[in-house]
View 1 (cartoon, rainbow, N blue to C red):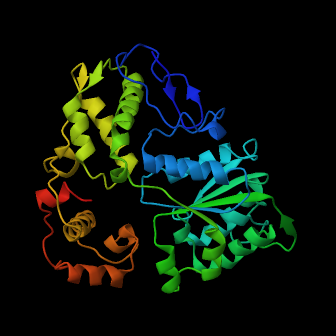
View 2: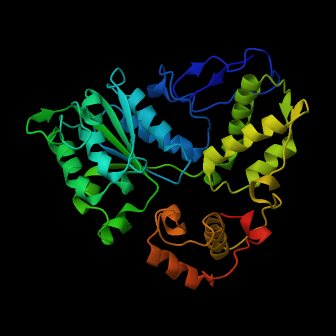
View 3: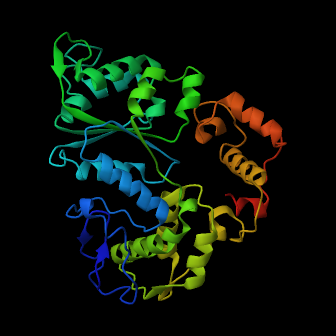
Length: 360
């Protein structure tokens, strides 16, 4: 079978059993000479917006500049961060990842900076933090918008001065780390609301890169669908010969609020359920609606997206798992938008089929 072209280089095809033998290879930025020779990560697509992002990767990778990746959940910010690392002079060093939202705030300081024995109850031995592990390499701080305010000055110091102390320690440790951050939240708004330090924001956003949502790169959906289908057909040993054109067309019309991650999960489900030689599926399974995409206004799209989020949170607006947090908004901001759009928090949330399928 033909080879698939990746972000960094051409790699062997995932499927060695001649499944999908008639399909075209997934292609992405074959003329990006600065990225040639790197085998990871594989980023599928050749849309203009993706090429623009990769051109920024090519420019910033050779430097040690701090990079801020902004974009919705599921757009592939971590893969862009890995691409920057792999195409930099630090590629032989470690690439260490930390999800700031996944670690309890009480443990995050120890996780980042390490701790000395006896620093807190249960600290029976010295712990090495992520900044030490990432020395001579890259530290990727995902969901930086969830970093507690009390830790932000310490992060600012280690980025600027390249030194820190372990929790419970007095010895100053020097480190040589390149920091890449990512978030789906609106950091400038958080700065205005005093939820994020302005000095840290300015230090992190030296080189911002906006990672586009999947709905802004519909021409990449065909390549992504075939790539994921080939991957899962090989893993599950299901011999598909092709992907139905009407299936791909329906997927291209969908808005994909969960972006590439949602598409990948849907293709995996479709491969599991498929019993034919040609992969097919129903886009209506994504939202319980038809896959049509009749035009709607921006206001309709906002209303639909908020309603979908409220459905997932069962009408809960505030709190860490509420609709405001999922949308990256302050609770008061979301309530104001709901009033403007005529959404009553006390109503039973039912999303119109036309609106749900057409979120822009």
